[in-house]
Image (cartoon, rainbow, N blue to C red):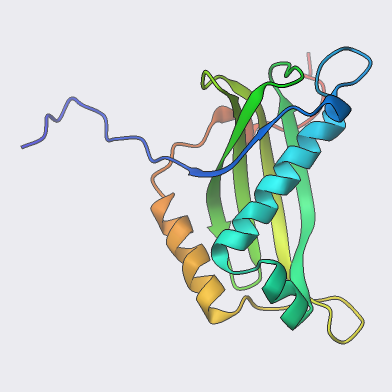
Length: 168
């Protein structure tokens, strides 16, 4: 029997990418430039595409891919050249054509360095004009399973914040 005073176990995201801060990512301030966080999160989203069946072979065979509709990055701590990085991904929501994901970038000690929220849409390009298209059934099944697995995940307060200056 479980102890009612204990909190339920935390729902973990998917470890989706490991990398290191490349020399080319270090800016004039001596740490990873803001553009490089975008590269890391984009690479993580691409790794997730591979995981659910939207990899390079699928993209070439179907002329379909994901387009980013919206993206926001929160910068929490500096990253320096050579530092080990890991990205964890959570599927917040998904429908027939879109997914809403959250990613957390951590260092080797597990400290949060940056957060990223994205909305991505499945797009067919075979006609020459990109158009929203439903996910293939097997991709939809994987995406739905990941969203269900993350349904108990505790959303960080950062996701509720709007960008802008605080009003006084």
